[in-house]
Image 1: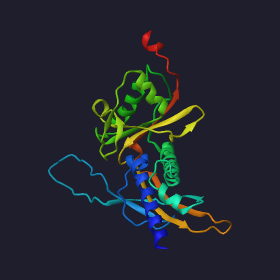
Image 2: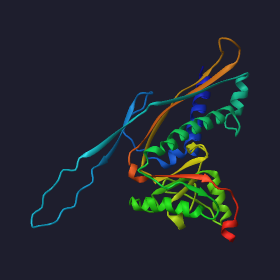
Image 3: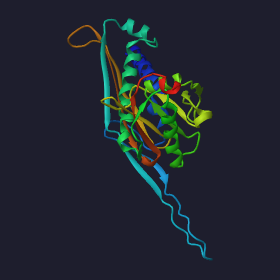
Image 4: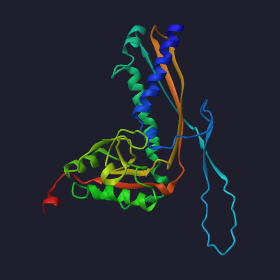
Length: 279
């Protein structure tokens, strides 16, 4: 039994490590919450302060009370994976390998979480005019997203942009150079820190509708996210076979808590022709 418990701990650690390394949600969201997560249906609290007001001075000063603002985040999303293997030794030897079953399970959990978090675009406080993107206007589209963040008083170094792969291609064809940026949260983003003052991420999990993709930009405080890995188990024998089963579960929740600091940019792939630039 201790052998199985050891494998369960390793798999659980691998899932958590993969999520921490790869999730855009963990990189762009506010994850500073109070409270314990034990199961789906729990909730956690994000604490903040009300903004002080500024008044004209007329010789007397009136002190206002600044109360804590508590935002409750429900842990209402529940995802799992379950697969079987023929040989326990095969499972043990594959743990940590790039294409192991547990790596694939972690990747699919990542996709599920990212898809949900990046699907919160409808809660953005600002939605820019839809744009058909080519190499000629790709940088303009991204710059307008950053400008919208600046209008929301989000300072340089505390913001991010998530774009689809086709928009990254347009930027490359337009001659834009990418560099790895540690980011405010040690994100390892591919970004424009010097040029735009924010981190840039590329994701296939941005929401789409037909040919339109909803790129997002925001501050690192705009979206709250919390997760917990639950019930990672290795089952020695399934009832209907001699196979060993592995299963794991993640519960999580996400919520836009500062909509004014979240920007949505509907973009459509306009092709990679450079004709507009050359004209």
